[in-house]
Image (cartoon, rainbow, N blue to C red; front, side, top):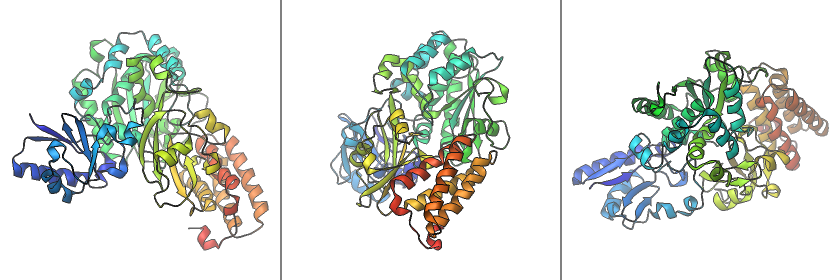
Length: 518
């Protein structure tokens, strides 16, 4: 019986040499004429340990990392194939503290299975949710998702079941499911990890959404910066179609659902659902005024569900284990688990899936290990480039939609970016305005003009030109952008700006213009 060696094919692992490790391993195995199978799995999400190589043993998988090509010969000599001891040995993978502390529901298979093996997917619980769904009435599926408490994992946390119910009840000869995989927030990589490491769970979730709402066609919209993810999900769709998971009769149920991948140019504003739909229809990504909502008039003017990758990938376990099982995790109105992506100046950067309710401090200090530089953590930005900056005094905030909203923040796509005490928050506030100015679709005046004026006003503060008066102007600009913008790009830009100004006033001091413009 051949031994299996798992070497991630995930983009994050590839970026630090996983392909070279796999090639060296294959050469060494061939030279020794060993009965070994190399499986290119997804990443477990422990990115400071990538490339992380795993060996399947009788006692479970044993991990080694981070592995370089030059380590391969030494690992084999040390008994790698039996899980032998070596300085790079991390022990049994499941017992690594970073993994052991997690509650993996959505990412249960990521890093464990061969991403393109449907047999592997089935053997690890895949398709159980879809099998249950095809035997249920659409209304019952929607009710189960509603009762689970699942909310949108991409931004505002809107209840998924309510969105599905609206589309189910909407009149239309053709309905659509659109997966928003335009992952553009800084410090986020959960969508990419699913597409590369467990693509069938996303396909399964989209098929369930189609059956639940009467939609027979789905589109996965992602960005051109994700070529590897696009190749993986496209191949997975082909495999799913060949095995009747997609097509005119899903699992022989008589329900039709098929899907395809559409590639965008990478505009940040296309993460907003209506701009995404414009791009999907072949036009420039410009935000639409609402109403009508996409649930009533979305893609091509038809009723459309627009859900984030993690929302859809969470549906199969709800349909498999039940609404009560999923709802038992979390706190308040934030139910289930959330894949937190820890990045920036942090010691242990990676994906950490846990039930809602952990404090921000636990995630940054305990799980993330503090700053990579060893300096004190000054600020944490949660929710991408439009998220608020939280100072250490607010690290007791639980990871919960309402708790973050109450403190002027947002969870968004659950990306956490850590900054140490060398960060200049005036520059960060300026960057928020500048980012908005560059990425604005230009349709509404508060976003288009307000962001440009914001950069100018921050530069005035940096130059020491009537700083108190300029700070008042910043607050006024932010108020106009927050309540006057058509979408979240302009509406949320005030979050990083005002949080920086409020919590780090000492940084809003005059500095030379050359530094302020850096």
